[in-house]
Image 1 (cartoon, rainbow, N blue to C red):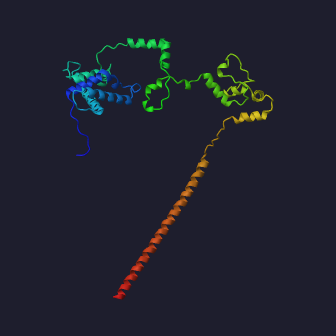
Image 2 (cartoon, rainbow, N blue to C red):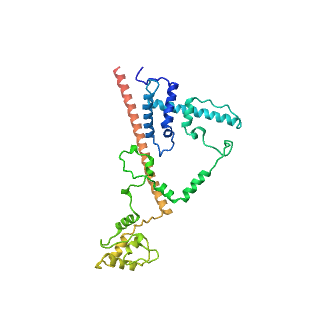
Image 3 (cartoon, rainbow, N blue to C red):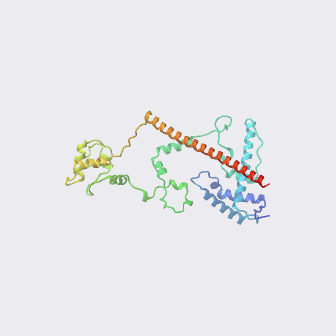
Length: 339
């Protein structure tokens, strides 16, 4: 018949009960976890591999079952259970909330009902409209937890920073999980605000190495900074507390101890640091009309050339046709002479 897959025998009731007992005892919570930042797809595949080993080693039957067939049975049972519970909800809705004959569940479905997430079976609870369920909701615990979070700064800091160790960079990204994004930054990537500020300022300083430029944290808001020594830094930060003449003189004093630079060179360096501006000219109606007329002229030239090519092609076809007719006439005359 070919190399197609052979159909495996059906699962016996004992095998079904054995499988769902294994899932209930150690794997149900992780398999039904819907949050992608805690359990990844790769981890779930590894769990099914463990279930396969445990099932085949302790199975009451001698038939080997792959993890694909075990997972397929699990998913089909979940669909059947959802269908039954949806039918029960439909009957209850039709009776207006009255008594409904209970759904009959076997032992496997009872185990599965305790494993599955209630929201995937019964849906989300509705407090309004005709889908509302007569239950008393208490939000005391949620409010107390929210108040504790808002009033306890230590808890906020713990949630923000986390109590986990720094993780080394992994070369194998297949094992990387979304939960790793919540881990703190490694010490190699950490730096203080002062270090980051000084590194940015050092890129733009042009003075001698002996001169020291202070960080932003060293400036006092109540005191006026010393303009004679920090003019270039103030210019980068966008301060406009000095005139153009004072800037040129203070640049000479701070950057060149011998005073060799002149005011012209300082102004040239200041102007060179300015970003170039792009001038954009607006199109007037006359420019548009001129360009449009030029485009029309070119299109007319192309159209005339196409017409000339078509006319020459037609003339060529006429000449070719007349020559063919003359050739046929000459052939007919030659045949008549021979006869």
